[in-house]
Length: 187
Image 1 (cartoon, rainbow, N blue to C red):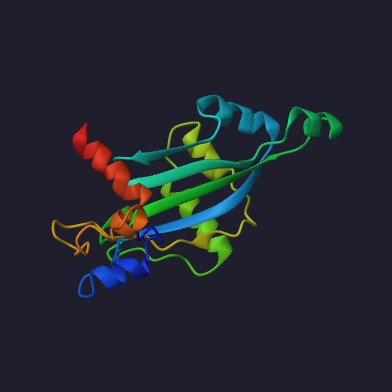
Image 2: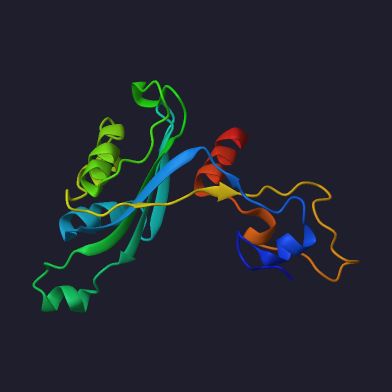
């Protein structure tokens, strides 16, 4: 069974001519952000774990997740001053014309430029979503996340008479942007 992720070696064995992922024409930056209790409690009221959203006007996307929320005991010991550690991912389409740029917008080189860029492309988002990005500290260290997928095609692999198959990302690697777009197309 091939359940070895989006760069599956089992897929490479089963699909020797068509196993490589497709690079999705999207750029994505992700960073870890500490949010103070008064900020994260409002966000936590939306969802206690994570959420994703997109702006249909600009075709930008955000994923937000809690990595660590202090327990009541931890908050009590720190007099309520412990922040929650959160993850914020922001993406944009890699195409000419995005955000008024003639050429596709690449990921900026420095962390400061990356923070400024994601704040600029989300500056007109409504609250609380806009504030989540706008409150990213200037000294944050956004990392580049490469987005790839591998949509299965009918007859893509020979399952060797039912003895071998692919599941999970090995069989259908899909980004969160792709899944959001599929939902938009269906509803």
